[in-house]
Length: 226
Image (cartoon, rainbow, N blue to C red):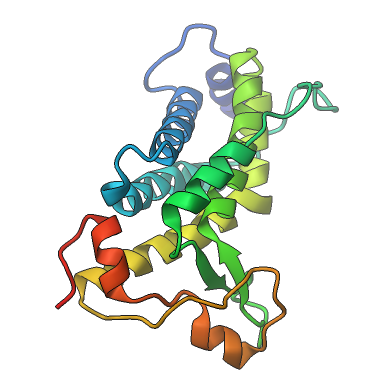
């Protein structure tokens, strides 16, 4: 690519005056909106709508992720990442989400669908969302410090290396929960599934992501299962 073709992109990434149409501004707005929304859901003020709301927020976040993924490689200004100091603690967020989502927090996931015969593992939506928030906050700290290119580089890199796959997995779990209730498809009980257990494929397939629709219809804020 010629230097003349690169100039608009560099100007965009280093613009001193925030522009609503600026790629960096749009991405940072979507990311900050997600963090605020998930934090608010975790407070538990509206538990009946928690899962549908998280489904919406994760879906919107992945739109930002898709835009970052489709964008050409973003190269930071400095070779080494500036020190941001200690990372913010997300343990409280994780714990609040775990309490709010119990007993539908645990689900099964295959990390790489292109690896043949890869065994599913047990995951938690609360862990996923807390991990995603950690990655996003890291980039947001750079953005707020005026290091726009560094922030975009981090969000793009971590989208490919962690939070993209993690958010996608939790989205599938959330969508499955809502679909089972909407379609009146009862599930079996989740009791006994633990993310620390080393379960066989058959055992995991039997218990992962399973809970009675009657138990989750209320917390989802949806109609009761018949």
